Length: 155
Image 1: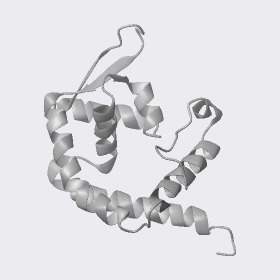
Image 2 (image 1 turned 45 degrees about the horizontal axis):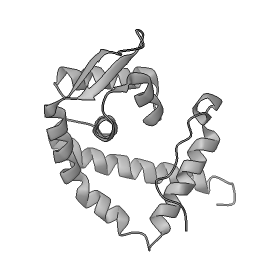
Image 3 (image 1 turned 90 degrees about the horizontal axis):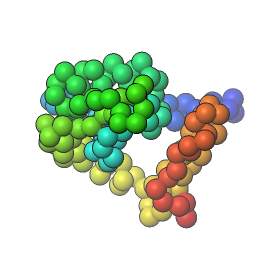
Image 4 (image 1 turned 180 degrees about the vertical axis):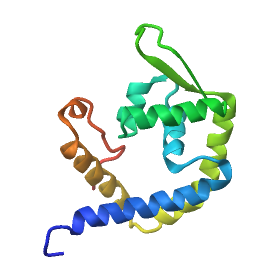
């Protein structure tokens, strides 16, 4: 697009399409794509502070807190006082949350497989790197202290 809106609109279209498809895959589990992200972050590293989840999920504190309250009411996570920071809450997946996350991973595998099939070798890794660079460059200065890094190098 000559107006310079091609990249932002393309990113938005891709994100919304992925978000909608993920919501559809997760509908029977009673979770949203955003809640799935939090469960996935906790499945990857347990006992994370709420602030760390906010940073890793690229979300705002109020949204993350609201989602955590809902997940806690469902018995999927537990929140306890942090052992060394009296102001912080440490969040962990419960056994029920771990089971649900495994089910969600299975339910969303066809979508991830479909997305992987769109790319030739090395392209998905390059895209992940490009997206990480965009996120880092456009993040507030406080987030840049802990930049998001792609898991693999671009080729």
